[in-house]
Length: 479
Image (cartoon, rainbow, N blue to C red; front, side, top):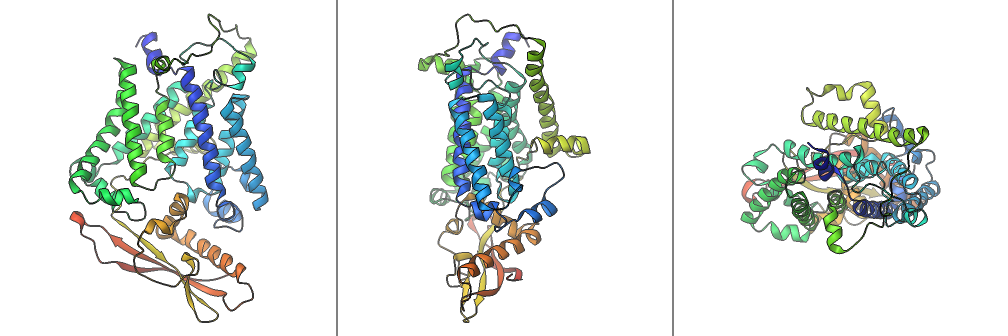
């Protein structure tokens, strides 16, 4: 591949880098605002996962978090505020490289504080910010550019530009390989099963569920786009036009996902990932100039400057090799066993590079349901702690999605019936008891124990549903 062709495929226009900076910083700010709604429940020692239990039972040696220094809500709020200030500085492009690194550090920190509430979108956002640390995000349309305009080769070609593009493509390559079930590849019933998950389906998703033929078409289109788009963006012929079509198609795909399923920020984060492929021709047509100094040549670097330049690129290169190998391990553990060797595992854990894109793979689950958590008050009245002390009913709610305050609570509550139920369920029931008894302290409305039931419902082919099964997962005394 010639140098010009390589620049065409792996170079990123400085205006695209500015868009990435603004978009990623905005998403981090939005993420902080959404997380702050459950600051006490998810990040303090009085919440669902106290620090001592997290460190002892869930974290490995190389996982780190500044949010573990203190378990009070005041300290967590301070870190949230610091992260917001840093992300805002990144957004406007003030000392962009430094603020991007700090944004990544604080994002990793808050994600590690409670991994049980982390959906796949957390991995995507963290990794996109990681690769952005090695790119000149503040070259144009930034405070840095206003204070000190400079010359820069455009498009920017580096290990990091290759890394972020490959990262986006890998998300889809891995998920396609893992989606090996006939539901995706021959029966085309995957969307039917996904939309049958009442705990995720929106009102639009429920409406689409009434059209079996449409769901088969949507399954085929989704799987086909996940195969074609990651390849199309690297086609060396008519690259700019092909990329614009691929970006538009994937944005529509993720918009459709977000309209039909409650998946939080995932569609918007993936939009930003695809924007890394926006060609310079897109900005030229909009009439937006780079703002770079015309005919400026980069100054000759001193030895120390060369070290500061090539050091990060060497780290990015090692990270890229690791990400490729780790993705191979996800799809073929035997061939890529060496990725989990102690040294490689430490590297991946320290830089938060581990990732697994098995969403709805090998096929969407056919089972879901709803929770009932009855507890007896001292006055003899039975209440449902899960629903704020309301009356106990085992009937199916009108909308199961209304049981979850947000996508992170939904993700957390999945653990109560998964293989980690023995670790998470007692912690969650302790939290519910403390929360209720703290409000009703010293009254006959306090509760002494609670039972955790899951009403399990399985979706069968052709709209059939197995009888609902009531499962007692845990009977737990209140602390």
